[in-house]
Length: 232
Image (cartoon, rainbow, N blue to C red):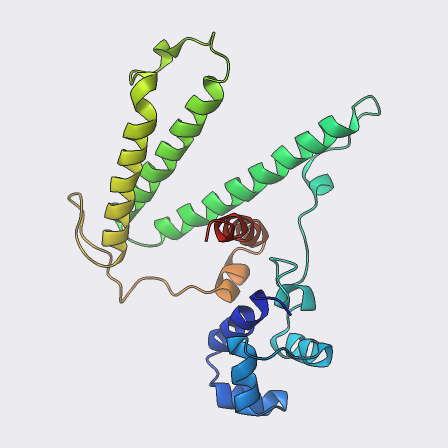
């Protein structure tokens, strides 16, 4: 079994508001055994994987971390681009498909973020998150733009020697403001979020509210965290 299974089965139980004792009773195991599964102390057999998948109405691939979507569906490169002409080379096709897939992950995820912001009733949080994303786009645009040294840097007013450090500093400040606002405290001239009225979210709620966008968000989370784990 892998490290995703304990985290996912615990998340699914808490999403339903079930106590460990109640879930164990309905799954036909002892509370102590379920606790061991959720903590990763013991590994369960495949029969229990199937049983718990049926119980929570998710796929075994999702439980095992093989799919970021609860149904087990995966985003395929071929599903993100139109049919290729016979003349295109395979490597070019794969590259274009990968770009299209990554574009979908980013676009769909940002669409969810902005929809949540529109319903958050917090101008401050919306402003800071928007500023952070704009700074990210700015940084990567300059990186791509500057890949050809002949491209005129006069397009930008901040000199090349400074923009990386200054934009990183700007993002750090914006992120700090956003975190403070999201915790209910004022920052950057904005009031903090009313945490008691903030929308309640979970993977299940997100999947139901954004059925077409959620798979991309979950894949973005998965890919990003896999890269993060390599740094830990």
